[in-house]
Length: 124
Image (cartoon, rainbow, N blue to C red):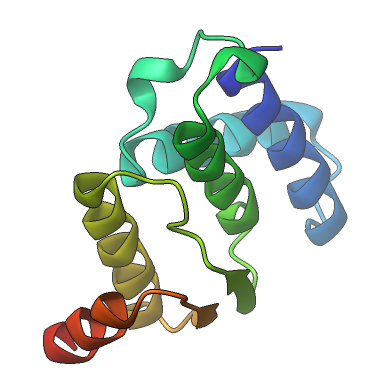
């Protein structure tokens, strides 16, 4: 299953559960918009057609963070989201969390890296 297919399935399930719409077409469009948003937000668009099982551990982690963000849950609990992720992706992930938090989403993030806690505090 490709990354895009995986995200789309989760988007349809999560959005259908939270939606009052009965229009399947608008639900499909909304799910596709969610997928595109998450691919861009976490900079994983280049992996959209790649099989999830073939991704590196860090890229799998980014995809699963995207899955967590689908449907805009009001509170998200994330345990060491950047474990196994390269430093550039770690920074992008942190920026994604911060941009969502500015839009009134709440994140509870457990971090095992002391330098990340210091960076997050200084960027806030």
